[in-house]
Length: 203
Image (cartoon, rainbow, N blue to C red; front, side, top):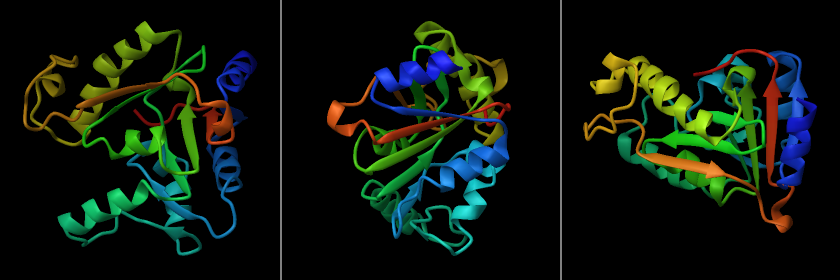
């Protein structure tokens, strides 16, 4: 774990270790600057740690694309607004022990915000998402993350049945964007903050 933190630092990203989800929540909320505008990607990890509920309880200025009852057009508008937020909360689908962040996305707004836009990105990751290297990261995304997410969302895709990616062309496909963040520019070294939690969280 300590070596992973050093690897993240060498890639101009900040790394933190949290004993459990409660400490992860405290660390994450402590990284929010005063009066910041906040957005977030869809993340089971954020919900399991209580971060999602804390951000949407009225204390923070949040662009909430998940608000119940909003229209599809309003949802899209808020997703776009999220790219201009001060702080963006999300998880990663895999983190290599060499300090790289791997993700899949459907519409792409979540990975877009991780790559560029918000001044600070806070990534909360359970220990179950740590992988040895790039090969294992892509294997995890194709054989674990995508099928599990497709089943959770009740999508009619081959992977929801077989448990592995078929690189399908289904209209319900949820893995349309694949990204890897290898490092940040030196000028952006305070941008990405990765909190590794010593619990299994998310998919």
